Image 1: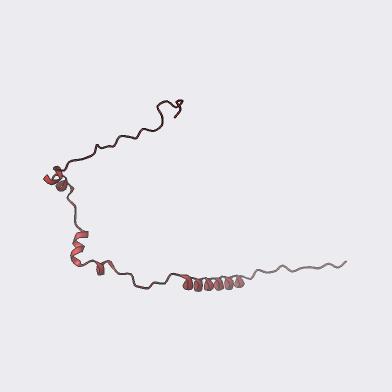
Image 2: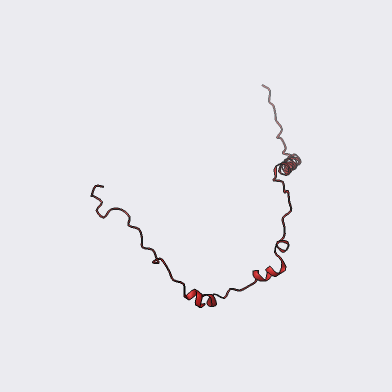
Length: 97
């Protein structure tokens, strides 16, 4: 009988590193190829809004002044609030339709 002694295969970390780098490069090229194209640049907020509108963004709303204003107090409601809950189901569940 012949006895064969197999040597343990050594794991080569350099091979794994090269494989990961190659997969990363392939993934990067795939991302560059399939990513959505940006046709125009994204405008900045300062370019869209003039400087006077910056003051509007920082404005404070005086809710007390609005709620106590005579025009607001003169408004009337045309509905009953809160709305009554809708009637669901039958009063007698054993009664036929």
